[in-house]
Image (tube, rainbow, N blue to C red; front, side, top):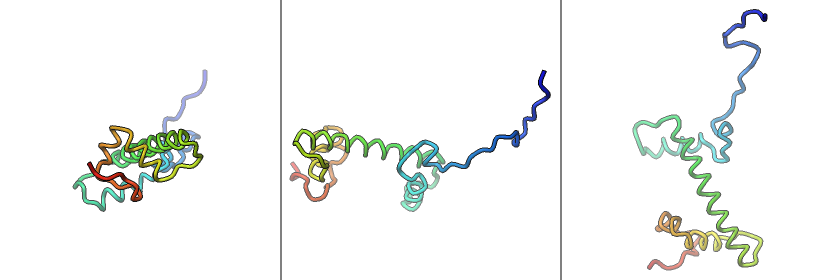
Length: 113
């Protein structure tokens, strides 16, 4: 029968310090998002998970737009994504089109209807 185990914090394993961006494997800096939220004075109180969640949402939107723009470029026989393909991808998707209604993407947006 093995001897008693210590339940203290120094049981041989050391905890690695990881940044808030690398722990959830986010490419966007959680610290930068938090700083922008605080400097923007959007709220008096800011929870610790709000910047992590917002960075994840920004990552998802970026990936989705780039995926759709890549599909547009591929269907046009191009190998590079240009601002025009990003604009077409956003404009052809009903949800993204509504979300980015008042946004101009590199001066290629079609006229307002």
